[in-house]
Structures are given as structure tokens and as C-alpha cells.
Image 1 (spheres, rainbow, N blue to C red):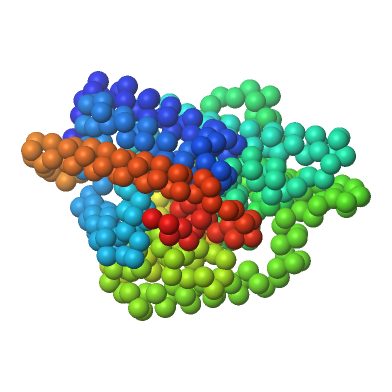
Image 2: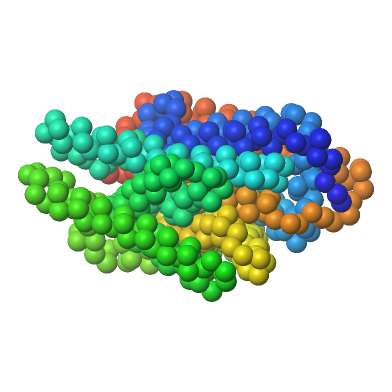
Length: 481
């Protein structure tokens, strides 16, 4: 099956890259205030993005390009996607809270579409749209860094204490900030590889990257560090030409961020009534508690798998069956998929992640003899860093992490040299296009309707801060439907 003529899809990827780029740029610092909860607003922003992307399928060129890209994935990958979605839908229908399960599956369908459309954007205009995505991620990090320092300096000048939960985690948009960074830290310098920047602009990009790493030292989780180590090992093993230069650059940026962290810590220690830095505060106060809680969560997830091996407890419904700790998800993506979707559908979801990582490694190795392809290197490293983090944090329940994961996946596949998929007839291609468009529109309508219903129900609900346990929504154990 060959791709449609370039004249047919040349313009479509530019629209897709623009929509996705706007989200990547503003999502770290802004969310539409449509609900009373910060995390809910971040989720709504994600849903708005996915709805806008689905609307682009009404453009015939984009619908056609989506069907062709779908065909490029190969029958094995398509089979895993079909099993994952169909098994998840069945699990939702037989679960205790059908509406919540259906809402989760509707979101997953749209995330698959985001992967496809990002692939089209990365393929259709090649380097240009890759530049749009890379610059958007760097600009988003830059806005976050700028807003952090403005807020901190303003509080210091006024003699106020700087609170990390508010304002920082308010304008950082997501409560679990490190899980967003896990997918983005290694991408900040990518625009320098794709553009011929002047020395001044290169300095600005490095400044953003260093300060973004400083924030990881300040508020990031240990899971992000585990992901960083895995990414470094990946590049050290599979990259050949240019390996040391890439590793040295990332190490210097990370260490420079650590220097800022040390200077910042020293400054705070000399400031009366200063609030402790979250990273240090977490290590000193929580100690081994975080690890013991994750062991408890893992045991609970395994128990659910044993009790509900086929259909699971229902997509997104771990928190409805577990309340021993405050967490509403098991902080481990593979265990969550198996517990919520069942062994068959959950295994298919895990297999998709494995297939993607293997594909990224092959792309990395295929460029080993031709010199460094810094885009492939950075994307593969960022993907592995985020996925390893998900083994300890379960980051794929978070809006920003979900979007970044799908964007990275589509970006890696879309810019590959794979041009021919399985041979199909014209009728099959039309069937694919109709099916994808129809399923995507159904998923959007379902998600939007249930979102409006949720926001209406929780608007007047009490909000005890200590009970905040996000999963899909701010209320991870929402059962009011």
C-alpha cells in the first residue's frame, strides 16, 4: 500500500503540527478554568486538544492520510491495538462503574488518534513539522521556567514565603510535575540540532534546559532519575558515532542544573522562614515510606489480577477497588493495565509499549553507521526515560504524560523510512477511513458528554485537600454516576 500523492497531504500535516504545538507550548503553564479543581482543568485542556484533532478528520485529506498511516503500522501492531481497545471496552461494560470505564476507553481511542495524527505531521512535511514540535516543547519549558522565577522573586521581594504547592504547582498545571518532565527533559535542546541558531539563541536554549533540570533537582521524583539512567544506558549501548558528545552535553546540562539547585538551596537556608525544597523535604520526611507504599500498591494490583484475570476491574477503576493508601492508581503502568483491563487486553497494551521501544532502538541502530541523527537519539532517549519512570510513578494516567508519550511515539514512527504497509484493496482502505473517523467521533462525543456531567456534579462538592487522589479526574474515587 503506497502513500497518497504528496500533493494530497502536503498541507494537512501543517495544521496538525500547529494544533499539537500550541498544546505543547502552553500546557505546562496554563489550563482553561472551567472546573473548580486544578487537575481537572489540566484534564479538560487535554480533552479539548483531542477534540480539536478529531475535528481535523472532517478534512478529507487528513482522513485519507490517517487511513494510510494506519496501514503502515503492520498487522501485528494493529492486532495489539484492536485487542487492547476491544478488551478494554468489554472490561468497561462489565465493570462496576460502566460510565467511568467508557470515559477511560474514549480517552484511549483519542490518544491512539493523537499518535496517528502526530505520525502524519512528522511524515508529511518532514523536518519542518519536527521543528514545530521541538520548538513548542522548548518554548513550553521556557515559559514554565520564566514563570517559576518571576513567582519566586516576587514572593521574596514582597517578603512572602514561596509555597511549592501554590503557586508553583498551580501554574505548573499538573500536580505530578516530575512525570511531565520525564518525557521532556531530554528534548529541550533539540531545536539547536534542527535549526541554525545564532549564538545568542543557543545560549537562551541552554539556559532554559539548565533551569528546567534545576527544577527537576528541586521538585522531581526519584523515578525520573531512574528513567534518566536508563536513557543514558540506552544511548551508551546502541549509539555509535557522536555518542560521547550527546552524553556529555546532557550530563553537563543536568549537572549545571544541580549547581543552580545547590545555590538555590544555600540561599533558602539563609532566608528566615523559608519553605523546604520539595525534593529534600520528601527524602528527609518520607524516607522509605514511598517505597513501602508502592510495594503495598503492587500487592493490591496483583490481588486484583488474581481475582479478575480476564476482564479486570475496569479501565481507570483501580482506585474504586482500593483505598488502603491515598493513591488511586498503582504507580506502575504495566500492573495497572493488567489489573484494570485484564490479562489479555492488558498484555496487549504492554506489548504495544514493548514494540514501540524495540522500534525506537532499531531506528537508533539503523543510523549508527551514517553518523548521529540527533532527533532519533533524543526521541528514543526521552521515550525510554518516560516509560521507565512509569514503572515507578504510573505517569500514563496524567494528562501531560499521556500527550507527550503519544506525540513521541507518533514522531518516532512518522519520521521513519517505513513506506509500505500491508497490501489492501481500495474497499479496505475506505473501510479503514470510515471506521477510524466514526470511532474517533464517537469517542469524542462520549468523553465530552461525560466530562460535562462530571463537572456539573463536582462543582458543589467539598474538597478536602488531604484526600486529593487524582486518577482520571481530581477525585480518583469518583462514584457519583
